[in-house]
Amino acid sequence: MSYNPFSSSVDIVENRNADFFEPAHAAYYNGSDNPFRLLLQARRDFLSIWPKSYYQEKVFVWKALGRQIVVVNSPKAIEYALVRRHDNFERKTPQMRRALEYLLGDGLFISDGETWRQRRPLVGDIIHKHRVPSFGPLMADSACDLASRWSKLPLGASVDILHEMAVLTAEIIARSVFGSQLGQETCRAVTEAFTHYQSHIDQVNLGYFLGLNEGLPIIRWPWLKRPVQSIHQIVDRIIESHIAGKGEHNSMLDLLLKRQHKNPELKLELEALRNEAATIFMAGHETTAATLTWVWYLLSNSPQVEERLLDEIRQVCGERTPTVEDVPKLEWARAIIEETLRLYPPVPILGRQNKSADRIGDVDIKPASLVLIVPWLLHRTETLFPDPHLFKPERFYKNRPISYSYIPFAIGPRICPGLQFGKVEAILCLAILAQRFKVRVSETHQVKPICRLTLRPKSGLPVTIHPR
Image (tube, rainbow, N blue to C red; front, top):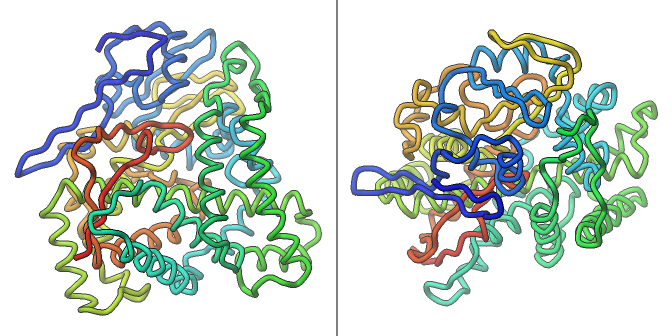
């Protein structure tokens, strides 16, 4: 692939026949290894900078403008960094912290140290897997509302499925976090604001590579300020309503408020509450929306996989609408979701900044280095997943991968606390919607995965909706 540092063009590989489907992914990088050019390319898309040699179980090291970069792509090395030496590698990179601090403040996703240690158990308990079944009816109701809206569309109507899934999951997380329906227009405003924010934020932070260990604060341009203000105003309005006693009991936000009242030392003032509520809301809706979007793309190109899914839904649910109680029995649906997360992990690069010098494998790591654990590479390493670029849900059907080889929600103490919530939500929404509709990707649309904070199809994903 020829490389032009001023071009955003990336070669995309996609292959299919009657027996297999190789969904869209960036071609192996074979351009210039000049660090400055690689940083320019990474600012546009982190997925397009990896040569074939990086898709193997190994720890790699290189430098960019004097900053050491370590890529950890071995299960044993990942266990060492994220579990055994978590205290040294707990901190998110300046790139991620600076990119999200304007939007999320000191929210759990980017906090560390005492703030993270105080709030992680609190948030983890509120969205613990044992609470997930209580949110099941909210998930099902929201999916059924969307199905009702789709049923009123003209036959073969075209929609952007990324946008549809974002509004759906925003409504689910809003009902769960805030205990109230935001309504389609408010959910649409939040999802559009986050999309705008993602598309304009700098995800590299050149100041860090020039020697500033904390990176440089982002410039709060008007085009960033508008989406942040929009999201903050919506979240603040709902929090103030809850504080005034108008919110629903047992929502996640209600539980946060009760914990603060019981434990003032948590210091969850209005701004901190907003940061945690916004973090749960943004992370909770974005990751599942992206996952479901990729699911529809994969099923659209894999008729045998889709038919097996419909057979399973019929066997488990008959003609009735699937419920959260059905989820444990929908094993093929779960396998589809997990294989989708392997191919398209919502956050395909997990960056850390080590506090002190360390050693991973045979690589000595300087303090404040950029340490990258890259699920995009790990999940496509052939020694861990044969035929790594192919869509094969059977990998996960009554099977589990090697420990630390599959980490779509990170691993160790910083594993996503909403992991179980997101998986149940994805399986249930998939079953409800697939039971009633075929979703088909436009044949003229070239799907291009792109990483801008999270992994999405570039420019959305146009599909047509067909009732079954």
